[in-house]
Amino acid sequence: MSLLSPEALTAYIGPGDVVVVHRRGWRRTIAGGHILACAAAEANGKSDKPAYIAVAAALRGILAETGARRLDIVVSNHWVHYMVHAWRDDAADNEEQSLLARMRFTEIYGPVADNWQVVMSDEAPGRPRLAAAIDGMLLGMLNDVATESGVTLNRVQPLLIGIANAALGQYGQRGQKWIAVHESGRLTLALLDGATWVWTRSQRVAVDWTNNFAGLLAQEALLAGQDESTEAIIFAPLVSGKAIAARPGQLAHLLAAPPFVGDGLGRPDPRFGYPLVFP
Image 1 (tube, helix red, strand yellow):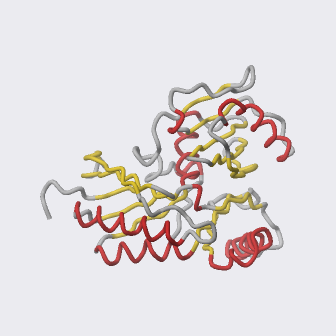
Image 2 (cartoon, rainbow, N blue to C red; image 1 turned 45 degrees about the vertical axis):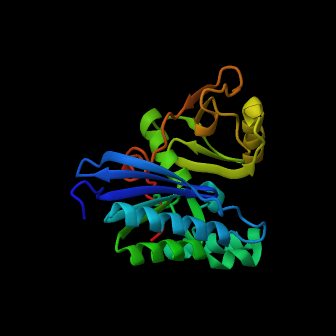
Image 3 (cartoon, rainbow, N blue to C red; image 1 turned 60 degrees about the vertical axis):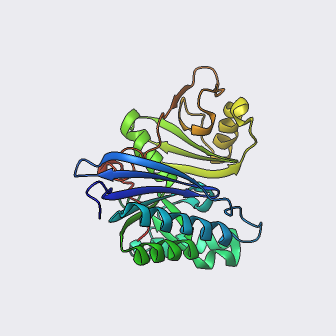
């Protein structure tokens, strides 16, 4: 291995591309990066398997090229299903809470959810938890890539969690906040009250979604049975420089950089209770 080889890679994966950040040393200094287009990564409408295969091939290539020893994965919200799971007093332990969340995913999405792996955020007893589900086929491919490449797969974490850690770390936990994460064709919204999960939902959006952002938040608040929050934190790298129309009096903060470029994702602040990762 070259002395200039990065010690660790953080890779964002999603339909169409892989964004890789190289890190080196105990300070996790950024040493470079790649944006890899996956030409074959378009899903065929029935299965995401072609997209998974293309992303796995791209990761194999960059790992072979760099000789990295450790790998962190950030998974696009396109490939993660979220749900706020209300605490159940009749569940004996965390394992039963997770089982109930899995059953709810199956009720919503049907048999396709049988192959999903489900994890939940680590909250104090009695508080709602964020449940996230990822296709077991994708997770299996990622583990195979790491094993075949001789690297340690440290963690696989959904994009929303990294954004939540970065947003609360930068803007604090007081009051209600909407967190909005935009990727091509998809907007994921989450409402937090302090550090407590209240609501989350992903939806398809058109290219002009920024013109009706205030309306989208108002609709979500109605669905969630909540008053409209006065603050929104937005991660929308594809619309950088464009005006996002918030309602009058609403504070709209833009996160300038994705958390996988900094330490927001790799080292979540334990005060926020969101170390949600897939083993």
